[in-house]
Image (cartoon, rainbow, N blue to C red; front, side, top):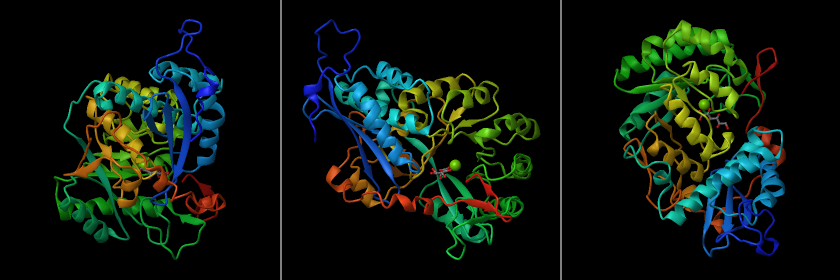
Amino acid sequence: MTDQSPTWPLAPNPWEPTGGRPAITIRNVRAICTQPEGIRLIVVKIETSEPDLYGLGCATFTQRPRAVVEAIESYLKPMILGRDPNDIEDIYQTCYLSSYWRTGPIMNNALSGVDQALWDIKGKLANMPVYQLLGGKTRRAATLYTHASGKDVSEVEDNVRALMARGFTHIRAQVAVPGYHTYGTKADPGLPIQQPWNESAYVRIVPRLFDHLRTQIGDELELLHDIHERIQPILAINLAKDLEQFRLFFLEDPFAPEDIGWFKCMREATPIPIAMGELFVNQTEWEVLIKDRLIDFIRVHISAIGGLSIAQKLAHFCEFFGVRTAWHGPGDVSPVGHAANLHLDLASTNFGIQEAHIFGDQAREVFPGTPEVHDGMMWANDKPGLGVDLDEELAAKYPFGDYELMHQDFPPVRRIDGSPIRW
Ligand code: CS2
Ligand code: MG
């Protein structure tokens, strides 16, 4: 660990009298990379001048991790060394504005790592869990949805039943389109690395899946589905109309961020509840959808929009328009990031649902304090701050793999004629 304190004050607080020094200062900022489950995660650790007082924040952009690490180490760290970790809002704004060109998943994730770590520190200083700082609990725990998939409708049904037996009340169902690589289902090892895709086959099979699930399982279970922006906008509208009869809890990402102009057409065509936003990175993308009440759930990836500070503002903005929260919670959000989601869920009146990723033992050992999941809900552990720690020695045992092979995790998806489409 490098002690940076001799370099103080690199960035003094503008309101400190000349020569004044805040009682506590940031003395080191590090980006820690680990992949205990084979998914690349980045966590920022901010160390302070107080012995043993540090904070952790999620900065995971799994597809471009090296760029995020560089942004943290070369640009944000020099700007915040020596500053008072209490000044979250000012540090957020200073970092945000400092590049002149703002937002984007790289800079936002870097900023989120810093921002969440500062909330973690503030919680520890106050001796309170972060949800207390955000306004206090308005629910016991966060209701979760998790994922069931399968190679055909009966395999999906079996997996749905298994999750129901574990207490889940909300389940996202995805079925493989035979012969094609289908988002949300296990990859078929027989298919080539250039993933073939057929959107007409997909929109035919999905209504059959939900017909099957409603017939076999009944009406009580809350069902969800993710289109993952994989089809033409007009096909998404037709699919939504076909699915209306199955009363989904929500239909996710029917359009790509580039196609937000289509949401008005969707609303006019069908009352199906819509969740949107995991690819959003700035306010111009979500503002109109919320204020015109064109979506029902905001689903941003909190680290991709810049962290907890902006996510809380977004949650409050949504509250005024009757839009609920459904923060993105896949395996490429670290346990620290899941805890940040959870603290905001607990404190938000307009919480809707939380996407769950069930971490295995390895990840839980690397991240002691990872939120518990039981009875279909996620529970905070009530420790000060975000409540999640990082065992650095263990984390180092799961280094990132070969970057050149990264395309194997996210290979290009192509139409049958070979042309590329959105992932
Ligand atoms: C997703 C993710 O959780 C979701 O709804 O759409 O699985 C997404 O594909 C990944 O986060 C991409 O890295
Ligand atoms: Mg999704």
